[in-house]
Image (cartoon, rainbow, N blue to C red; front, side, top):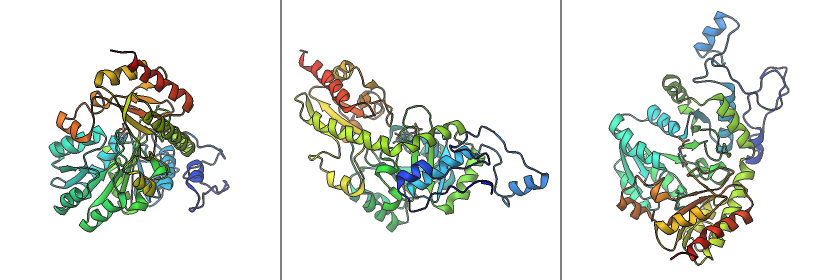
Length: 405
Ligand SMILES: *Cc1c(COP(=O)(O)O)cnc(C)c1O
């Protein structure tokens, strides 16, 4: 910002809703009222001396968009404000945020403990790529069993990683409890906050050391751009920036600009979708064709008190089992008209997935059974359509089961 511009800063103690709209923006001296899209691969200097001082880090300034760009910086600062983090580095995808963490923090021989119920590609990175390519060992433990975490952490681990609530079955970890276990063993806790978003879960306040995101989901919110972010303490900032400079896992400025727009409506979208999800979950429980419903906001959910304690709302994923097997689950999905059949989530358009044959098809039959991913399980990722239309569409799907046999 130059002194020509009226300062537009957001008080630190502002509500998340205010930060989502106003925090973090990098302004030019053109007096724009909305962030400009900074499409420039490199930045020019006023003199050779200024270039030298910028390269040496003595002067702050943009150099090259592989590691510094004003649109990307605006995104980073806004997300850092929402998560309550000192440092945020934007990446080309959610997966590259996890890779950045591995490249910046882990060494061959390090151990990682992770919940088994993580996003499928996270499982693949921790279970195969990092062990086979970088010599990192990973042990998976059940999300909801603190004794198993305690035992796994006792052997020493550089990082522990989890995602709560889990997808698709919405199991939860007690974040404060796992964070305390990690702290007692000197292990840093990493939380994937993609699903709950900072609107509904604040992992740093509950003791996490790192948070990462797939911005592709709720931060975008309209299913358009792929991106991610890694957030942590200020002491790691220079290591992370260095890893970005060397490895180039960079977010595109255009995507950063789309995510900035997305974050302005994050609270409205997440809150609306969660309200609809809860209504649909309650309604599904009353349907004769439905055997079980998974949603942390249901009276019947065994972990509803934990959800009430650590989350502000219960999210927009609802899963349910139809009576019968895979054929009935598929028939129900195929008979809907409005829901898209796609695994995306955090989109304004509601989606339906059959986890056992898509997102979780890579699990062995034993792992599917252990995690409860049965052939009759269907997952909803609720978006922004009218609740009544979504309910009518599910009714269409379930009615198709009555007319069979
Ligand atoms: C989608 C997703 C990821 C991976 O993010 P990409 O942007 O697709 O690389 C990681 N974690 C969760 C929970 C996700 O939903």
